[in-house]
Image 1 (tube, rainbow, N blue to C red):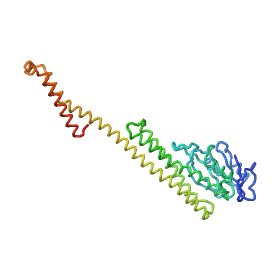
Image 2: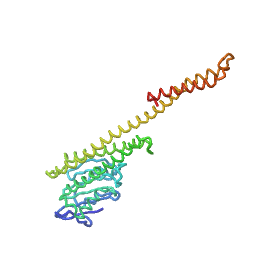
Image 3: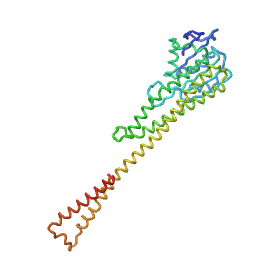
Image 4: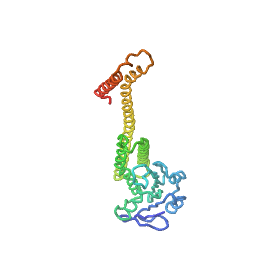
Length: 320
């Protein structure tokens, strides 16, 4: 648990055991989920506002989807950010809960929450100016969480393009199309995360207990615009992957057809040869050709001529 005091136009300062709200500025109570059981009692020492039991349960759920709800005392936003791994796939969301009071922000997050940790460090280093209110600090953190989704778009494109090229290249070492199906499931998960994020932000904007100023409206449009870009990108990736899966199976079918075509050509070449050999393999006494001096060589020549003629004919027609 960490508690920070944001005075007007000053860097945040870590403070000791929480007491009543200071006369100026606002507080940020940052809680790691593994150590956050019973956190409403800690909040009650700062503000006299009860926490809804269902909201408490939601805040401690690491897999809770993005969601908004609130009371007359606070707004609650549950938002899914990315996990600590910088790899684009698989998608590993981490839920963080934001309880926004008038002069207090409470965050309940995973231990490895990257976005909130980065915002905190930039505020402490002075690279970000004080947001001025708990409400705007929450907006700042949500924006940082969405920006990480924007940052993985190009790596996802590169990874999926390499995967698709490998599956369509017969000489590639990658021949397991199930990895492409798994990637499609990951993209659908990204799409679902973005959809719930957009719904949560829209509900917060519509039902918030705070008055949104013009600057807040600008931040909101910017934030939802970023989420919308992630959603559109995920939708586009899903279409591309669906096409890639279809192309993969079409390529496999095409290669199978080529093999069957080659086998058919060989069968067509050997069928008349087999017929002739079968005729002369019959055990009849009266077969005059059996007594020809050069009959064996003539039949071999006929067989070779028929085979070569058929092969040349099929070759000219592009059958092999």
